[in-house]
Image (cartoon, rainbow, N blue to C red; front, side, top):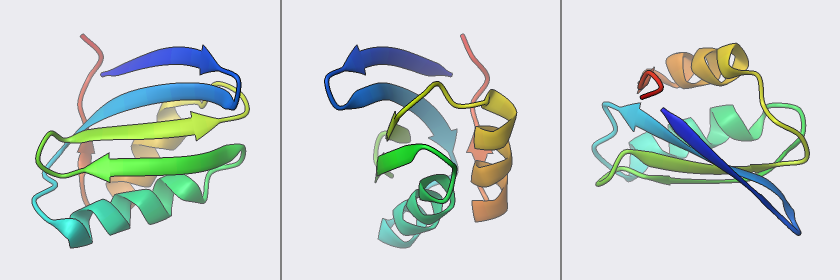
Length: 79
């Protein structure tokens, strides 16, 4: 699941990620998503499962899903 908003600093997308429970989880997801082309910032919050990504252009859902999977977590399906 994700939602998008275009701000002056880029496109902000909020994803729902399942399985994060701690700061290490947040770091793993942040590192993988931060490596995607065009991503300027990532903020993961384990307590809510929300991951906010700011990017220059819209991100490919499959690339995001693969990055989250590589970190060991699961991207929730869009509502």
